[in-house]
Length: 191
Image 1 (tube, rainbow, N blue to C red):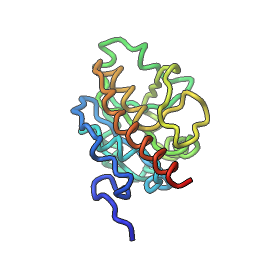
Image 2: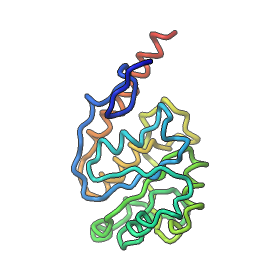
Image 3: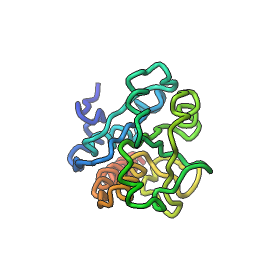
């Protein structure tokens, strides 16, 4: 049986904990993780949780039963990061509008699974949507993205907080680059 890190839950060979730089973020991140993604070896939800101190993970597809989550996200200032025609672009919000953002909900899974979380959890329908500008590129080339400008959960969280809080949290992406490099190194040894 191979040994795993108790913190990041990765095999010790791919543990990324040494590259983590935990950040104090004002906006709370709530990451809703599809159950199929929870144990996926390339998932970045836990990486996001470990990098941003004001964050939490919730696993599930239909979270309509979760009254605590409903209460938490139904408060003013909650938004879902999800690209949609009705979503406001974060970079077009005024400073005052950005200050009103208290909670940002991220949907973690394939696009199909993320959409399922959004539409099966009824109370999420009432929460306004935000989206990132389209000119962002991913460094996360381990998993295939449906389009060039689609991002991992960690990248989406980092870019969102950079824009909302007017801080430079790009150091959060160091752990992702570390993980990608470790993966490339492992694959090179394997072949």
